[in-house]
Image 1 (cartoon, rainbow, N blue to C red):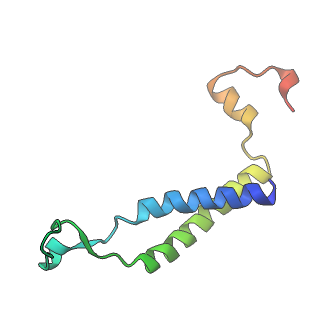
Image 2 (cartoon, rainbow, N blue to C red; image 1 turned 180 degrees about the vertical axis):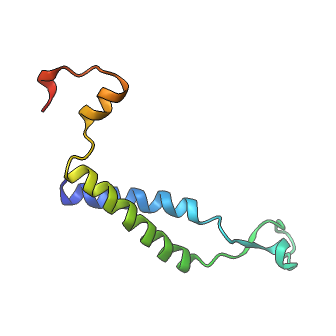
Image 3 (cartoon, rainbow, N blue to C red; image 1 turned 90 degrees about the vertical axis):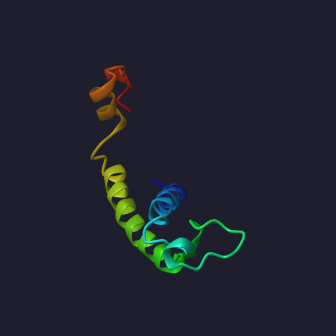
Length: 95
């Protein structure tokens, strides 16, 4: 895996993880009883985005490291996935 591929993989994992982490522990205006006129009661009042970004980075680093090891040391290859699911590759396509 090249450096560019590693960076792109980390970025994709980070953003997907961030989208999963954002909804946790949101305090809405309705929960806090401080609904601003003209807004929905479900609008967030407190996000803690900095804390969520740090948590996202830690989780993403762990996931990225696991995937990096699997890819770099060929623990699971495209041939393995083909063998489990499709059986389309011939022995000459082993690479």
